[in-house]
Length: 436
Ligand code: GDP
Ligand code: IMO
Ligand code: MG
Image (cartoon, rainbow, N blue to C red; front, side, top):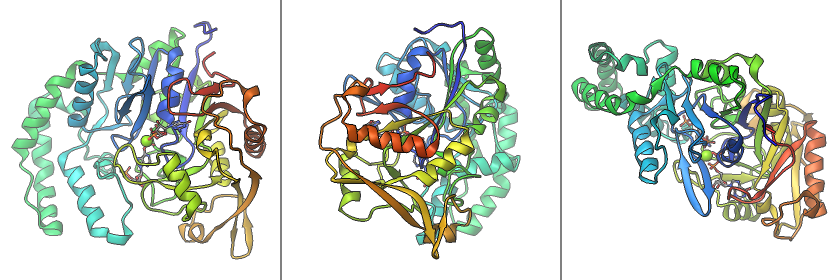
């Protein structure tokens, strides 16, 4: 039974290339928490929650929003497109959610995604042709570039209209010149941007606050807090398959700087992984299946991107990648999703090492040219035909499923704490609840 005597602060991160089912698991665990905090990324994320057949896809708002008593916070590490955030808020309100404005807090230090970030993201991708990253086109990279170059604009800059106007005007002087030289595009009109962003701010300012202070107060009063990662470890700007990554630290360490809390409060770090692997966008993917089995996973798993609608590339489980995720994030447990999708396959393969130029590699190589040429070293086990989507008890799982789970646990050296067998809230078996 849940008590507040022992506070729990849990980070949930994707252990692969995103879309592992983080939204579903965060929604499930929020039954027990006071707040959910997003700490990086932006509306490149698409987190899907399904409750009683009703689907909600969240891009910026944390996945605790379906529960009225959970405060949802957008930390300083997130880059926010205010127009998209407002749309998300409006849609939720239209469904009778987010009735209490205090349920949402946006950090005044969070950086804004500006129209020129989106344009630059899209133009660069168009220009790059076959060398493109395959970004979501939401302006994420350019917004983080400006943040690091100390040219970003933050929510707090909107507090004083004249300050905001001056910043936009100054920035656009150089930007417009660059845009017209490089891309031959029409200049951005500072006045239009200023007017629209000040308009967004009028509607959003009631939510703007100090996330770090809010989270610290909850922790001090022994409340449970969940930090919700976006994307996944292999998309991390430092530890992923660079440069085919996103522009933020998606790993557990990012939760500290991106929410404004210290590492000493964290009690658990849970990684989410699919029972196979998917990737959307370009870049190396050693276990990718370009055959009927890949098609099976894609179709049965409904592997279509929640943000861009692109078909996700599919392949076998990559334990080398997961071992990397265990180490980088300091994972204390793994939640394994989409096990139901594997039902019906004659054999299931999993990759335990890579072979490169006749050598065995047990770790993910940093050099992309090496990774691109890595061949997965597979082992396999017989599959199962049972429909496991209705199984709710570990002892009722087919022996083959349990064997697969055991192999994963043994290889990674951490426990699998949850098995997910369908998209609906409740289609899962919780082995250890990080908040109970
Ligand atoms: P996220 O970005 O990590 O939150 O994941 P997405 O929501 O982008 O993608 C995961 C997809 O898988 C969504 O459509 C979920 O509804 C779905 N899903 C999550 N867990 C399961 C599961 O155990 N089985 C099945 N069949 N679908 C799942
Ligand atoms: P969630 O939170 C899967 C991928 C893009 C591209 C790369 C860079 O739903 O798991 P960006 O627009 O971030 O500059 O694109 O990262 N990507 C994701 N892939 N899930 C996501 O989020 C993603 N967010 C970005 O496809 O390859
Ligand atoms: Mg997603």
